[in-house]
Image 1: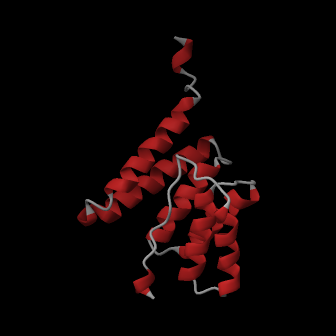
Image 2: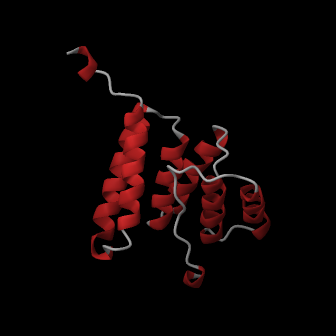
Length: 135
């Protein structure tokens, strides 16, 4: 009976994979956009309760908040992942996207894009949506 109490180590990775799949589905179901975003935030919050320093979850929740137009919140989560030493390419791309939306100085976000250059994308993370036409 004991093994039921402890979640297997890969359950967080599994949940992050599911988050990534659900995130991709938002684009096919735009009429359920808000509902899906709420679900994603809820799931990522739960993952972060278990592993507060899970940089993949931090990067993903940052991307979702950016997609929802909540850039201040997005930046908070992305900076946490940065401060934890994440080298994920998506982190740097998302930081740049959020800073463009917040109309930060070009030099600030170009630095993140340059940092992203040599990095590798973590398969469990995703990029925030960027619409250059929206500004």
